[in-house]
Picture 1 (tube, chains in turn purple, yellow):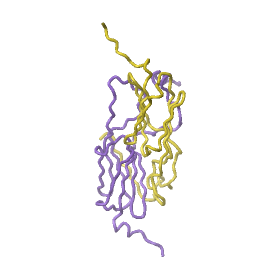
Picture 2 (picture 1 turned 90 degrees about the horizontal axis):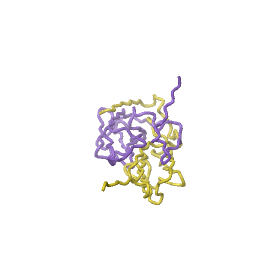
Picture 3 (picture 1 turned 180 degrees about the vertical axis):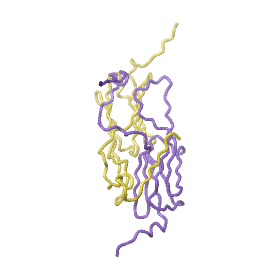
Length: 137
Length: 131
């Protein structure tokens, strides 16, 4: 039997209605958060992670045994007490994600930047890791 | 921590290795909307967007937010993990009567866009004192 649940009217009342703009889910789920890219270059790797709404004071980055860990908290924004919530999709508050790095990293030269909700971590390779790239003569 | 995920990757051995190409041309950003006595407030996660690349438009009955994204990687990147493939954000909200379109304002902080849409004076919540 197919049961259809109608959205509460407050969600789609005639003052505020969200158009369906894309059939794919916004983020499939929050099991893996934050979403990230890991790009390797000749002399370094760069990790880019999406962290909207996170302050840099609330973010901790560690590299240990070849594992990069990004952990922190997205603090809720202030909302007036009398406010009526119409749509609430921003859910993640605490997060922690680890990723294995593809090479040895010169830990002293790691740098990180958080800008426009995007974290960019640059992880330079160690001399030894660089030397392992063998040029074909 | 409520959400501990470990994603291990090994070089060159997994299906996640892709060239630097966006997977989707745009995504629908996550949004929160709430209403107060004076206004509707729309919040959108637009991580990675530059403020100058965000376009907010309001026509008769639609609020539209678009944001083009810069490329996150240089050329010759070997993508070991690639989850953020996208070119832009796009989302629309239908507006009804009762919004003071001339007084809409927006700010962009830490990748979160906040658009405040004040209600017209006649629709604002008013407290009525009992005499």
